[in-house]
Image 1 (cartoon, helix red, strand yellow):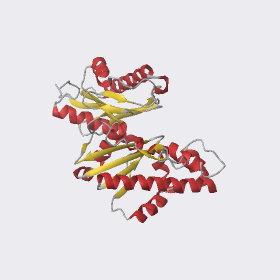
Image 2 (spheres, rainbow, N blue to C red):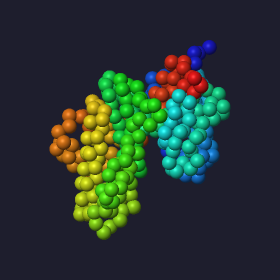
Image 3 (cartoon, rainbow, N blue to C red):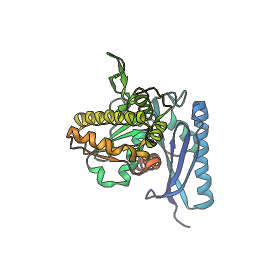
Image 4 (tube, one colour):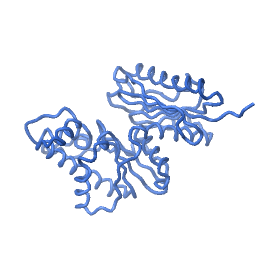
Length: 314
């Protein structure tokens, strides 16, 4: 009788898509696919889509890897996550009703294997650390520039959750509102895809729908878009300066959708960071959209190897 091979299923749940994978013992992907998340329709739709994604991976394993033994499921999800219990403590309306979801317990009851759940950016940082082990010896911060601004902190390869599971949620930090004297706004209103659109729209008559439109117009030489992009880089450099003085990391990784178009703005950011004289090493993340599922795979592998039930009440 052949010996069974441990396999880890990982899923990265986003507002529009779910990326799911089956990983072998060394976290080499055996199977990967992408499905609609239906998350905008609310909690029940998101849970149904997530279960379907896991079932898709299980079906593939049954057909193509008969010796596979599914050892656990790792989930990367938006929101503030209590990783010990696998519960979503807080969430935006990107997934209506997601706050309070006992995600690990729900999946464990359905699939009868251990489940580990973590915030999507924290999973992305785990994925980057797994891909670049030399980063796992010091303090690393990750910022993700998507629709909003996400973040995560790792110390010697381990994610720092914080006393209330919010460590690294830099996008929620209040900063002075540049357009309303005496008021404050969340940092992600300036530093994110939405932030880029906000900043660029405030520099002239044109109103941009999103950060992608700003980048497209900037590439075409639009003066207002170029000015907005320059100011956006200034706010991002400010955020990096705050991270430096608060956490003093060896490396800051920048990921998310905007980084895929970094050739338009990375030199501007480097120039502005150079003016601050900060010694922090700022780099683009390497795994792009795969970071979350690789991190979720690393998360459940660590749980499976340790034999610790992260969802048990203490």
